[in-house]
Image (cartoon, rainbow, N blue to C red; front, side, top):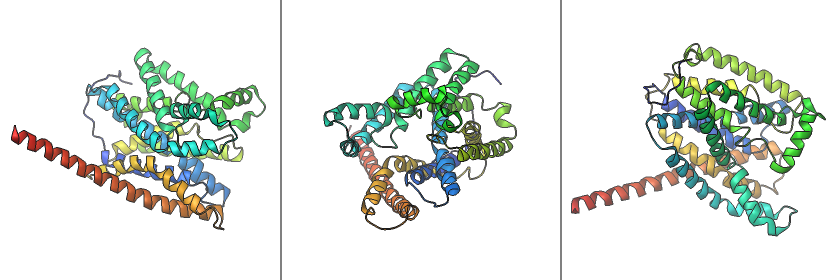
Amino acid sequence: MPQRKIKEHEQTINYAMLSLFQYLASIMVILLHCQRLFGNEAMHFIQKSIFGRMAVPFFLISSAFLLKASLAKKKDIRQYVRRVLKQYLFWSMLYLPYALTYFWSLPVKKYYAPLAMVAGFLYVGLCYQLWYIPAYLLGLWIVHFLYKKLDIKWTVIILSLLYLIGAVETYYAYFANSWLTHLYDGYARLFFSTRNGIFYSPIFILMGYVLYDYWQSDLFTKYPIRKLLLATALLGVDGWIVFVNQGVDKNFFLALLPFSIFLVNVVLRTEVGKKLNLYHLKKLSVLYFFLHPIFIESSFYLLQEVSMSKEDKGKIVFVITLILTQLTAEGILMVRKSMFKKRANTYRDKLKEG
C-alpha cells in the first residue's frame, strides 16, 4: 500500500450514489425498528439481522471518509465535533420526555431519574436510535488518537481485537458457559451492550479513514465488484452460522467488516448516476434517522388495541412511519430553506445600506 498522507487529493467520488445509499440505509433503520415484518423466521432474520445491520456500518464508514476528506482540506475537526454535538443536544432534548416516560415504567426508584438521564445522554442515548452519536464520537476520538500515534498495522490490530471482543454477543451461543460468556455477562450487567464507541464503531470509522488514504491502492481499485460479491457471499455464510445458533444480539457479524468497506468503495466509485443531483436524499436521510421513532412509537401506541398479527402490525407501522417521516422531513427542509433565504436577503439589504 502507498504511504498514507493527510492531504487533499483529487478523487472522482460519486456523491449522488452515496446520497442514495444513505437514504436507503435510513429506511433500513426504520424497518429494523418496526419490530417484526415477517412470520417466517428465516425471512425475519434476513430482514432484521442481515439487511438491518448493514445500515450503521455504511453510515460510519461514509461519514469517516467524508470527514477525512475535509481534514485533508485543513478543516478543523473540533468544529465538526461541535456541530455534531449541537445536533445531538437538540434531539436529546426533544426525546427527553420519551426517556423519562420509559424510565418511569421501570421498577427503579424514581430519584435515580436525573442520573439515568445523564447516563443515557452520555452512553445509550435518550431514544433507541440516538446511541449512534455517542458511539460515533467516542469511536472517532479513539481512531483519531491511534491513527496519529501508531502505524496503520497496529491500529487495525487493536481495533479488530476490540471488535472481536464485542462479537461475543453475536456468537454467544457457540461459547455458552465458557469464561468468555461469563465475562460478557458481567460486562453486560453494567454496560448493557458492546455496541458502543469502544468495541463497535472504531473499526468502521477506521475503514473510512483507510478508504480515503489508500484510495488509489490495489486493495480498492482492482476488481471492486468481485470483492464486494465475495464479501456478500461471506456475509451470507456468516448469517447462516448465526441464524442456526443465535446469540444475545446480532450486531457483530464478522463478515460485516469486508462487506461494509467494499460496499462503500463500490458506491463511491461507480459511474452509475454520477451526474445526478441527489443531495436532497442525503438531507432526508439525516432527518429520517432522527425523526422516525416519534412515528413508530405513536403508531404502535394507537394500534395496541387492534387485533392483528405482529407482522401485519409491523408492516402498517412501517408504512405510516415512512409517510409521516417523509412529510415531516420535507416540511423541516422547506422551513430551513425559507429561513436561509430570509437571512440572505437581510444580509444583502444591509450590504446595500452600508
